[in-house]
Image: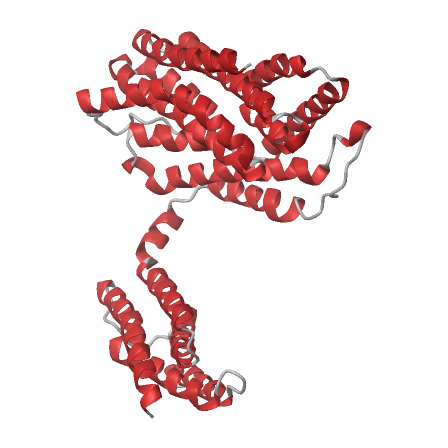
Length: 415
């Protein structure tokens, strides 16, 4: 049938690509390839295409029979052949997915077939990196992953989604949703650091550390500068990178809740990021940072149920105070609250004001978040002055001082 020619060709190509990756992976092993390769996968995809076309998507009986036949071929003969290993679960899954790719093409779902084939190829080709990375996982990594799963998938669906307490300021679901957002951003940065490991230079570690926890990153590099004063400039680069990345990270978190507030915050946060970007560019092009073993301090996992509970409590308190100030008409009181909250945690006050939505004027909320960012920047500068080497203190004071000054200038102009 002419209408079947193109699907057969496309199916054969997709199956051949999957088989090529499988055969390439087998040939890299110490043992010779012992399972299906390019030709077999191409034939499986064609078989799935013809079977899917014969029965159609509404009555795929022929496809089911074909899948059962391939499954029986994979399962039954191998135990009776001496010296041959069982194909394994991965081989079994990839064979059936190859058949389904052909069936999807026959049913005019070519995009879905390409996506399934691409994901199968990526998973097959990532066998060695995945195994290598899994062997390097520590108990702390597994604990952090399980805690993130608990924070996101276990606790969030269980908490009630309704206003509670005075002024209805406390919503358990909204409060824990903020925890999920911040934990997710921190977890992404931590996973990136663990995947890159020692290959990550000081600058990249500072950027990823800013996503995970800019405070932890600042403390770690400041302490390390005391141990290796000759690398103070590079450690200052990492601290500035972490503090600068903190700004777009907050913008991203706020944008999930309140895009309108994010648009107003773009101007002050861009101004505050300029000193850091200038310093990073100047150091990078003046003398490219050299990464040596042991230069980059280990950054601990920022996640944890205790940390999440502390953030949730702080967020709930700040959200309540924001609601009280707004109800009493104490708009000016938001600025002192934002400043002292920023000394503790920038995310809590930012997300609290973002969740207020139209109840708090966007301009006033933007000024309050900017004041909190200024306070948090001054806190990081204080850490550098108290814990860092002389060279790091000088550089951090200059850059973060300019960052706080830029934010202060905008806040006075906008207030």
